[in-house]
Length: 196
Image (cartoon, rainbow, N blue to C red):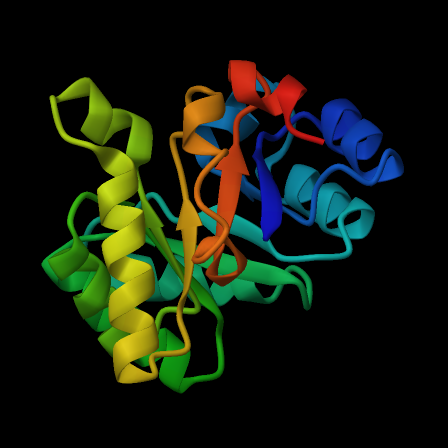
């Protein structure tokens, strides 16, 4: 199991890394904007602090925009992973970026079918939004479980990075599938402080 922090706070990320609490970071332009600093400088600093993957999201919604942004983001550091939303044009961008050797995290995944398509397109990480699914009367962890089973069954190398973690129940799951996925915790989540 790996734990990823969902943040752009350099101070919080540095503290979590120094304490050995996180393996990677996910972030997006909205979180970076809240820090009131230059996008690229914040990402560069996070990448220097974090030895593991740092997923950075594009803002474009067309294939061309996502490709251009993705290529620029990938140049920032060796540990950058380009985060692409689960859209039809996004899947095309995932395929082409991954074909170019760029690691991709597909975000905004709400079903096992979407996660399968993302993995088939070449995603390194696939991020089902567990908490948002729960908000809409679904069991978000069921999508995580299904994706782990699908990837194992078909030998797909994508890793499941559970996103939108809201409480300890999202972290404390049966160990038979826990080694096959990662979790993304936002610092404001109650589970982030209860998960060593």
